[in-house]
Image (cartoon, rainbow, N blue to C red; front, side, top):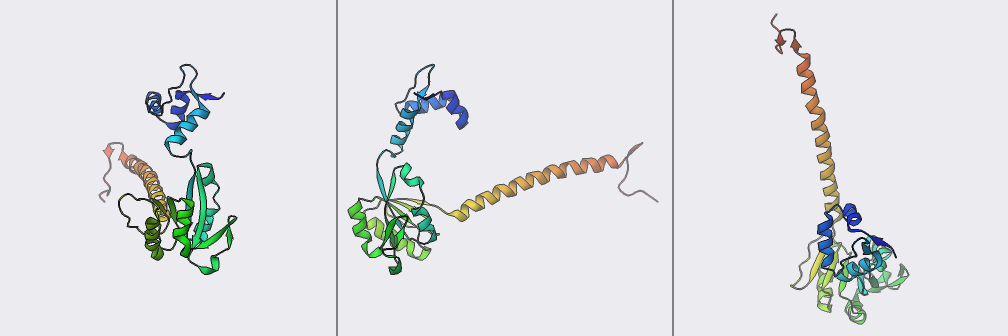
Length: 213
């Protein structure tokens, strides 16, 4: 039976092993001294706390390039998320298979939510349509929304929204790149004055920047 020690886990996570053991104790996992943690059971406990041990039906609304890419993403099922339906407002998309599933029209959105017991919705529509789709999802009983549309959604209390803005993620990376470039530039600049100062030293001390004629 594979096991892992708190020291190994702490080193991998970059945290203190004592703190890691304390955190795991809240999961009810105390491990065995000298042996460590049963990996399979530990994964189960963490998954249970994250709500990943049950089936979560999800609908994706807006099956353009992004929506289709999300529908084809293979990582949802392994984390307990099942794509229950793909929905789009374009009549030409109705019935078209995407990721092995026929796209359904938004006219049937409320029925789809009810029939599949959906509580999580993914919005991948253009910005102009996102709020209306959000309102319909909430009215149909969805209480958690993952928003890929480039707009801020307004929702009532009790509804959770996570916004995924790829441009902001790129801006964060650009900031880090700019900072790294600045640090490299500062390092190069620090050496130059020292070399320049050394060059201006004469046998009797500092040489003026402009020598008298």
